[in-house]
Image (cartoon, rainbow, N blue to C red; front, side):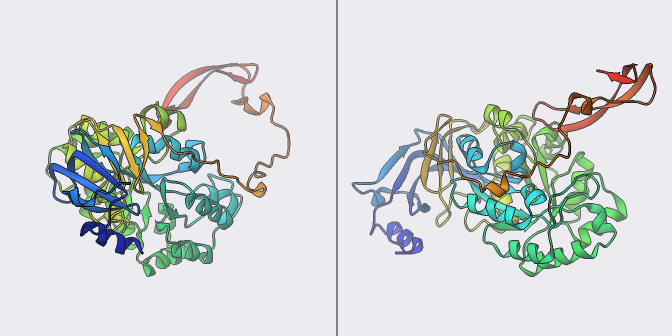
Length: 425
């Protein structure tokens, strides 16, 4: 039987479910309601939400929610997964216990390995319980002159990636490529449009005519939002916006005033190293910060679930606890501080009380993917010395400030001593 036939049969009481979740309070992100409801799951998808008594069989497993809230699995709308510093397989172990069941994977491997690097990532995606949807990179490197790439991405490469079922969008472009009418980038945007997939934006603090131009000809969303004014301007232009954990103290209070529709708002981590993911979570920490800074809990949960699913055309599979959807469910004791007690992903209990429950084998990367660091000379301590160009004195240096989560957030001028022609730090 197909999964569809199975769900229909279970819904009608003609077949038992594989798994029942009983005694929970459903957070319905479709209607903004909370009410008692049980859930029946079969073939990894939701068959029944409500009375599941007809779905129980002798081999049906039971998860008792004991009055806890049932939330959809959390969706990270934009994450450079390689910046976590672990593989997608290991990232599954870290994110799933926090209730993050889906991530939209931004580029990195392609910068080094080209299309075959993305094909390698695709192969790993198909072996892990974490859902990973690709944001196909339109250029390598992302910003010319800031990176030294190991490969390139052609229009043929992008067109192929856009055909993959796991590809949800065209990835972020350099805003100046759009403004300069770069033919290669515009051709790739046309390719995304042809298959009706959105285009990710990266227009930090872009204003006026330039923002109007990228909204008109390119970007459908943007994760680079720093002020309430910037957020509102992009929303007014029909762009969808993503809020990140680090800027919740600035953006969330403005959103919490309730003067703007939040349907077009999502959440993302962008970049986060593994030690902070393990300690505090991924996009689930952004969700908690949003609530802490005043956003209504159900509104915040919608931003971390159904809003993202709708934007990326994935809502028929994920984003809500609804019949027919993949069974990604977070069981949480608190609505005001949502933390996963238990996590069901793809209809399977994958985590409980912070412990990952599956036996997940390590992914074996091919040898050609491991030989990518090519240095003409051995690295020595002198390579890291800063030579300001004079022998002695003081110099003012812009120091990059990095937050606890690993984000580069500001430049702070500081004075340093110069001795023997070297900066003393």
